[in-house]
Amino acid sequence: MRQRNRGLLRAWPRAVAAVAAALVMAYADSAAGAAGTAPAYRIFLIDGTPLVSFGEFARAGGFVVFTAPIGTPSNPDALRVVSLPESAVDWERTDRYTSAVRHRTYAQTRGEEDYAALTGAVARALGDMAFAPDASAKLAIAADIRRQLLEWPAAHFGYRSADVRELTATVEEAISDIRAGSGSRAFDLSLVAIIEPPSEPLLPEPTLQDSLASAAAVAQRTTDRRARLSLQQSVLSVLSRQKSALPRDWYSATREVLVRSVERETKLDSEYADLTSRTLRKAKEHVSDGDPASLERLAAKAREEDGRLGYQRPNQMTALMASLAAATEKASELRQAIDQYEYRRKAFASYRKRINSSLEKFDDVVDDITSVKNLDSIGTRRLGKVSNRVSAIEVGLLPLVPPTELRSAHDLLFSSVRLMREAIKLQGGSASSVDVSRVQNASASAAGALLLLDTARRRIDEFYRRPSTP
Image 1 (cartoon, helix red, strand yellow):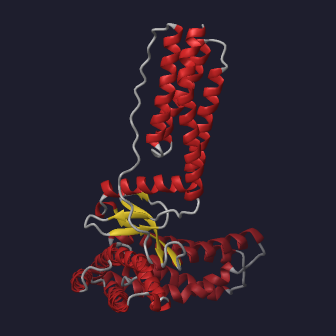
Image 2: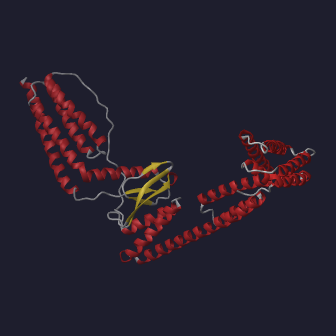
Image 3: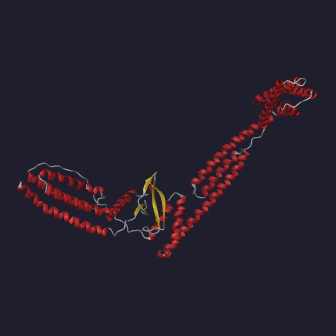
């Protein structure tokens, strides 16, 4: 037993010294790192252009979404959320740089604090091993701290991975001494991937000029027109406020490019708005005329003008083309209805002329039938004249052959005539003696006759009415 402890004690000074040195370095570096600032994230485009991202970015739906700082990144004048197509980004370099930024950010914030906690845990484990009652207890403590050391670099962005490997080697040496002293020949092998700190060099922290140049580059590449215009206007605003802090030549050249771009975007907005309003106004006229061919020519002309403008407003043009397609369909329906109307007007002109004559005769008896409906008193002589007129109407309807579409309306006219005759008959029978039920039945028959007449008249008018847009 003494011999085993002597072997362990020989390894102990080296282990304690290594842990003590690690603790001293951890606290020293922690004080130095606390004064640092977190580096800016960068997104590298395929052409090598580095874009500044305020915080980390996200990838979704084929786009990379990030926050672009306008002004000094540490204290930007404004922040704008923008997106770029994923295909424009050099992801291999961007991911390497992101890992490097995370590593340094961790080092400047919690890195040394967490590393100090790890070395403290190693020191406590070594102390516990020294006072453990037997070799198996010592080995259990050592195996646990070794596991923590092996897992630590991967969970902490590879921070101080070389120092952690040295601590691991120290613990493994102590484990070997314990096993040798106890006569144990057991051997376990733990395969753990070696985690190294990111090797991608970090760029200098972006200056005001770098940030503005990056925002301008994003504006040129974003496919969102509103985001592009907002970015450009924000950069121009910061340029005006920070003019004295920027190189004169760079300021002038950058401002000139942005002003031209904003003016162009504004002009394009005006031209596309004019194109849309003109096109929709003419489309409305063509729909009213039932002219789908003119609408198709109008759509072709709009596409031609879009090409002249450089296809700069795809969403607006998509909406315009959809409106024109709907207008063309509506005009086609109206044209079909007009063609049908023209055919009916010519093919059934004779029926229309004769049925209009019959409807005029109905007008001659409507007032009297309405009086019956309203339970008004009508003289016998007057009822006789009305009865003769109603019979004449029926005789006039008999030889008429209506179009198939008006057959039901024509039958309603016959039904109206029959109800009129019934109303007159009941009204005449009740004139000599007061019979409440006959008077009421006469009123009901008159009401039914008038209703059927109105329905038939409306259907005939609709059949011969020229179609128009709603």
